[in-house]
Image (cartoon, rainbow, N blue to C red; front, side, top):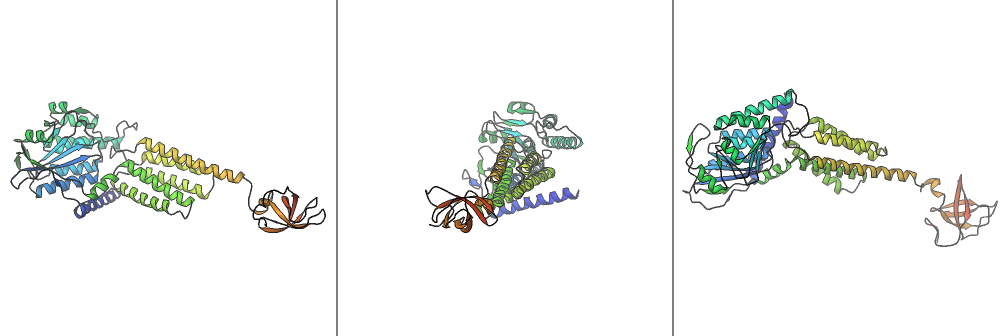
Length: 456
C-alpha cells in the first residue's frame, strides 16, 4: 500500500507539473470561425494517439476553458488504440462531472476507439461515430497475450467490467455490450453500434453531427438538464499546450524505449572512448527523457531491474575482457527486461517487439565486434617491451663483428648488439633475439629507411 501511495503521489506531481506548464506556456485555442458574442459555439478537441496523463489533463483543461468561456458543448474527436486505465478513469470522471455537455465523435472514417477509447466515447452525453469507424476491444490485459489468467488478472477484469457498466448505465446505453467488449474484446462498426444503442448518432462530418444532436436533452454535472441547440454553431479548435504535447510524446512506449537504448549506448561509448564527450552528454539527456517517460507509463519493476543488470554486464565488458560473455549475457537480460518493462495489466500499450529484437541484434553485433577486436589484439605481435624489439630494423652505429659486439640504434634507443657476421656502421640490421641487455642481430639489404625512428 505504501508503494501504491508513493506511485499515486509521483503521478499526481507529474499531472500537476503538466497543468502548470499548460497554464504558463500553453497557446490559446485557434478560432476556425469568427462568431459574435450571441452566436453559439462548440469547443473542439482531438485525441489522436494513446491515452495517458497528458491527454487526461488536456481534456480537463479544455472542458474548464469551454465552460468558463461560454461554449455550448465540448466536442471530443477520437482516434485511439487505447492507453492507460488510470488516465482513462480520470478522463471519464471529468466528463461525467462536466458542467457543460460533452460529445464524443470517432472520426475520421477508418478511425477506431479501441480499449480505453471505448470508455471515453461512452462517457460523453452524446456518443457518435463517423461511417467506417469501429469501437470496442476493451479488455484490460494485452490482447493476444499467452500469459495464463490468474487472480490479479481476474480482479482487474472484473473491476474494468464494473467500471464500464457504470458508465453505460449513467449514459443510458447498452451495458451488456460494453461488458462483452471488456471481457471478450468484442469490437463493432458504426452501424452495429447505433443499432445496439452503444452510440447515439452516425454522422459523416461535424456539421451533420451538431445538427443531429440539436434538440436532445442531456444531463450535465450537478444533475442539471440541458437542451442542445447546436445547429449551425461555430466551432473553435482547442489545441494541446506545448507542455502537454511534450508529455504526450514521451508517453509513447516505443519512444521511451528508444530513448533508453540511445542513452545507454551513448554512455557505453563514452566509457569505451573517454574524452569524446558528445555521446556521453547526448546519452545522459536521452536517459533523463526516458526517466520522464517512466513517470507517464506503468513500469514493471522486475523488467527495469533486468535492464539495469543487462546494462551493468554490458558496461563491465569494457573493463573486464570476457571475450563477449558478459556482453551477451547483458544483451539477454536487457531483452528480457525490455519485454517485461511496460506493465500490460494496467495498459494495452506495449513496446514493439520488432524494436526490441532489432536493438538486441544490434547490441549483440556490437559486443561480438568488441570481443573480436580484443582477441585479435591479444593474438597480434607485441609492439612494446622486449617482445616488441624482435623483428625491428635499426641502424648500426659502431661496427659489429663475431665475438666483438657493437652498438645499433633501434626502437628509439641505442642498444648493445652482437652478430655472427660483420656489419659495418651505417648498415641496417634486424633484431632476431634479445638476451638480457644485448640484441642478437643480422644484416638486411640496404633499401628504404630505418624503421621506428632509426637515425637518418
